[in-house]
Image: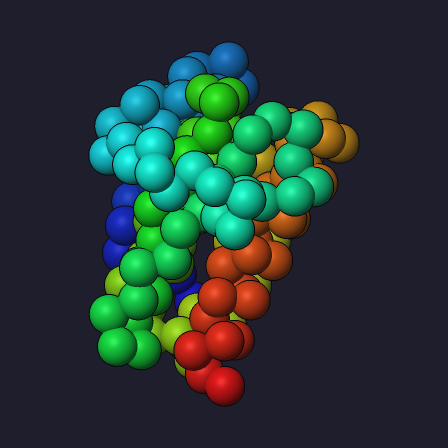
Length: 137
C-alpha cells in the first residue's frame, strides 16, 4: 500500500541508474520540503535512535495523518520527505497497514544506507506508527 506521491518517487528511482545520483535526488527531495518551525524542534518531537538530529511533528486532521519533519542531515531530511510521501494524508488505520520498510526497499534504500541511517529510518517509521496508533486508539 503506497500513496500516489510515493509511487512517483519509485518511478523516478527506476530512471536513475547511479546510486550517487539517487542520493542527490533524495537530498533534493529534502531541500524541497517546507521547513519545520523551530518552535517544534523540542524534546517531544525528537526522534531517538537516529545518528543525526531528527524531529517529527504530527499534525492530525481528524483521523488523517499529516506531519512535518526536519533533520540536521540533508540525506535524512530527504528520507523524511520520502516518508512524508508514503504516509501523509492517509487515515491512521491505513497508515498502520503500510509496510514502510518493504516500500522503502522498493527504492533499494535498504541496501544502500549505512547501519546508522537504517536504524534512524526504522526509528522514524516507528514514530509515525506510534502517532497513527494513538489516533486509532
